[in-house]
Length: 246
Image (cartoon, rainbow, N blue to C red):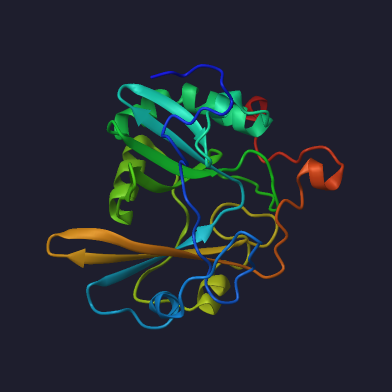
């Protein structure tokens, strides 16, 4: 496998993580899409049947990243699938260095072909955090294109000592209003500014197995993406975490 300095190289052959559709009323950007109404109701109103299981998590506001195991090699990636070590973005390079420093933890829980995806919170994008934990919060465990169930993600993350998003609700459908009310006051991860939103995971039991049907998200309407980034403010970067402060 070629892991040279080519900034356009994508070890997975494409993106490390796709986009999640929005629930009704969520703030969207030009490239975003809404979830079909019938699927949205399964998140927020009525589950399809007793085999369906809904998990609602705090949505974090950072940079989507991944650590992928390719054979016995561990690579740190941005969401678009490029090597973080060669990024012009300082926060992405810090992610690569953090993955290298914690390689034993990742390799202990990842099988070849798997990747741990999460939010890298070192740099404040639109929300500041007084982090009570390390700057990486994992929200998905992927096996190539397959998303593994929430319970498996939590078990693996716990085994590696990784943080998972705050659990807002688990069971049946949950309304947007109820989810956001439970996230008032800073949520689970030390948000100094209002929490960005929430993510719904809809999973389904089929026989003895559980599969992830789909994900959806809600972003509060007044949220402004990248409101703290220096390219938007003309001011210095705002850091939630830096290596010298750890």
